[in-house]
Image (cartoon, rainbow, N blue to C red; front, side):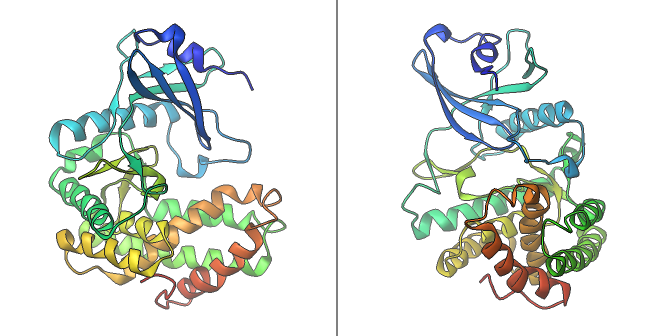
Length: 320
């Protein structure tokens, strides 16, 4: 794969860009780099998905969604106290650039802090993480105009597309597991439809894994908004529950969330938690043959503790 990072940087007005130091941090839906130049750090993202990583089931035009993500960050920085990255405009003034191979790229000012997945997590940090995501949700409900920004939609239509994708996994995943996934997604679709009728869908980060939460010393910064979109009220809480298997940590996250949002609708939480796992499986199962050292055991565990209980309308016991 051609390294287009230097080409991307050349499209921005950066001090001392010629001597920039680039460090590849991860490669999933993007090639993500930390860039150091001119005494400033940046995050460069080039949309070149790793082989087998397919988010097309989420829908939407990639360029419009990337522009929407960066516009959203500017809105959040302007209209809330949330700590989020700042997009950097290119030489043309656009926030999104297209490289010579057609790939899209964007640049953000680096958000200083320690990611939760590499930090020694304390009870106050976890409480603040839950409180921060709940504050985002409450702000989104007060700003329905944010829904006009091009973002993803976590709704019944998505659940139905995931059902179609899961059904195509027969032959790659065990037939019994596929059947449980489909039945679980049917239940999730019903819950999401009910939630939309009762409370509407509003902006959620939708990917609050510990790698996307940054501790700044007194606040929680939220990075990587690429999967953000309109969703049921418990979407981010469900993602937080999936960030850790430690029950004490889960309860502290919940306490932070409920300090803002009040008592949680457990049926909605279970559906959103299950959706976060099913999204991963449905988007990534073509890579199952690469992951023989861990994926089969994990899939069996998820089927027993998440997919089957959801399919049967039972409360999940694997969280909280």
